[in-house]
Length: 148
Length: 158
Image 1: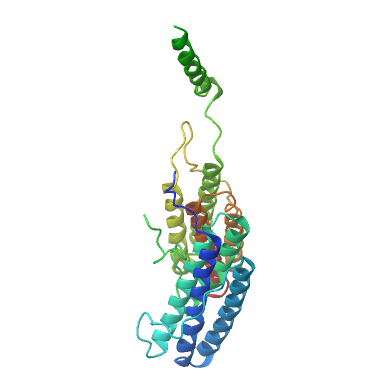
Image 2: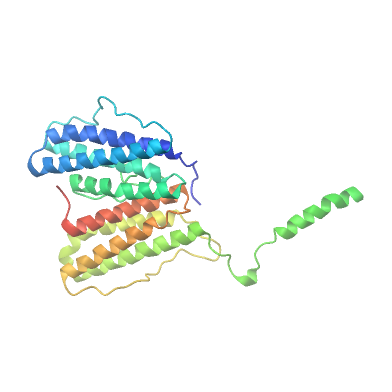
């Protein structure tokens, strides 16, 4: 009925989510520096949310007996961030990346983790909409469309 | 002769065990995956119906609601695409919930928000036991519906 690919291992999926959260924490530092006023305040709030999510994932990974992936010293940004407009676009892109990573957690067979992944998608999907100003049909699925 | 019997008997037993469903008893029961997909299809059809009726009653809402409706139509198309119709069963096409459109615009929006929230929550209940691909589709649609609740509540944008 559907294409069947082997489900990812829980630790592997959580590590990918953690890597996305690390990237978001870094990226919001860049975006926030380019924003002012309410946008900067929103970036600060979102940056803190990603720090909390990062800490949650690290604790989950340790509990599963693995070593959480560390943040990189620096990240290559997907495009040049030179002002408020590109900073908002970066924030939306970071949220898309985090949403996509949690969708990877939904693919595991463990039902508790699967539900965790699905619920963890909701805040970044909403934040992406707030930064972009528009919704997508399929949050977490790349460009918002389902791969065929 | 004795050797022939030894091979024939298990084959006979296998053929008996593999006898198809009794056609007089109707189609076989739906698998859990198909049942979940059918209910997800019906839920999307119900949402699309509410959007269409709300826009018919409050045309000023059309610019805001049209993109959200288009996303539900995309969800429905994708859910339908995941289904191979079992013999004797077809994908549901009927709307099962047709609430009246409330008399004020704000109440109509509140009804849409509630419908989206309910649909998103129900979507998450379909995760258990689903294949990885279907679970991801349900989770993505649930997230989409959650963003619709936010947009319907406050508009979007920082």
